[in-house]
Image (cartoon, rainbow, N blue to C red; front, side, top):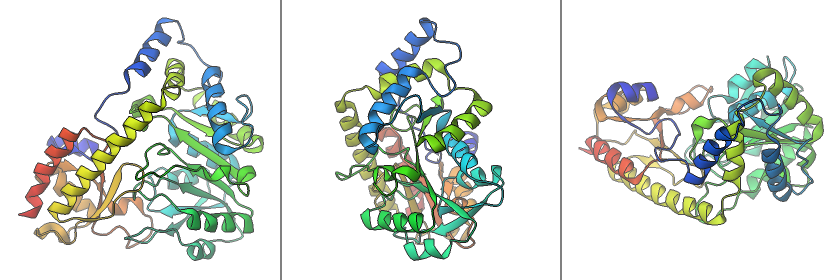
Length: 371
């Protein structure tokens, strides 16, 4: 969809990357690291000061003593973190539960391990996690579950009742839980992220994955990390070593500076995302899309079936192509987030980590759909 956006000079609200810049102190730290000679391999599992910072942060978040030399692995993005985590715990033929709609690397991560991704639907329009459906998907081959919260693409933040259902299923079936928490600092309406791995029942069986690209507007730096109990961390580290050796050393040094930014940075980021969310919801509502207000992350799944244009009969992929070519706004087809037949119909995903002026320009183009 980004390639289509470039081809048609469309405003890119498809791929989830900001069009505003990385914080100046973080860029300066990267430049300084390069000038100071941090240009060779770091220790494979991560630049020591960054691992120490992550261990400090996650000792507080998870409630157990995270050791930088035992439990932390810095990866080339969250995508690598997920793939190495899945490969480290699944054997060929094992099954892993994946909530759909799902990010597009979740299913391939299982296939790469010669394992089987088992989809469990979050039903529109509320996209709530249904423990009965989770249980129904369990077989003797089920070994793990992959959970993304705040959730891409729906903007859901799974609540205490839903997480309680996850705990039940994980414990009843002796599963490993892998969590993708990349949007842990992008939440709305006073919500505060709680890592599932901090819950007493899940501490010893959760692999926690996070990253810096979204919070600090540096998706191109490809910096993620895996925090895991030692029995899981060993496998993750081995696979990471043989896959990529290490993440970029000067960027890891700058990531240490990013994680050390004052709380005022995160407060300002939260205020800015509230503004973007409000503007995007206003635009979509005025045009005639049906959508829920996101609780976290920076995406909106929108139903186009009630728009007053003949193209509402198109498939999501056809509609997304129409949007890029004729409307001048690039989006992602809703059914691309599913392997389940019949899901995602008449839905597209908008990404709004953009300047307000960019969203306003997109709004002007989208008004073509309300005529």
